[in-house]
Length: 240
Image (cartoon, rainbow, N blue to C red; front, side, top):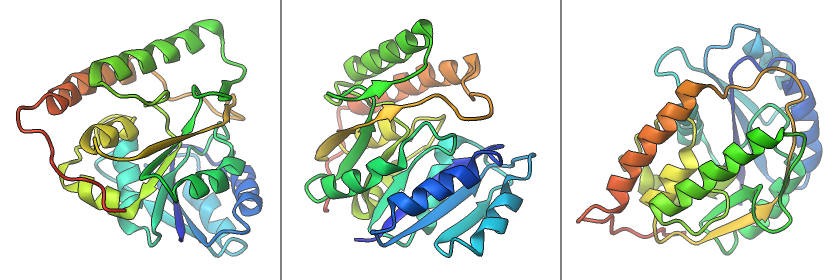
């Protein structure tokens, strides 16, 4: 199976060289491509990607000028991907590339594989108590409201089979910043596996977390609850 890894970026020029170096080692034994989807960076992120393409033949760049948003950037990467497995990770070095081979292995018996902070052996490092508590509460509320059984439904580090994505994409609205929870809602029959990893502090740059993001999450949760409890539940099942 070929892995297509999408990395959405917004002002991540300082982090990308280090991340791509780690990815080249972690993915050396896998057939793969890396798709950087830039959402209008002003710090020269696209130029950094272009400068790295000569030494990283598997690296591709998509520059988006409209319809901004993290989830929509991920979908844009998935739509041009050539692989059988579609993965996403952040560019800020909080997601560990060394976990990707384990996630690919888990995909042999699962439709969706989550890099999980909160499953057994998953960890979060260098977060303040309040930030950690907020994340835990958000994950718990999401699970209970939507009736999900996974430990980390708000993870930004996951992969799924192309077939599963193609089943869901006609119904995706891709709002906000947590595409995984929408996919889990739209694919209720999907086999899900969670692979533990240690979520680390950003290496450089600033977090994108703002009150507007939290407000959007609450609004999205209400919408997905309505989808989940619809009298006409989605009837398809993943085919891979």
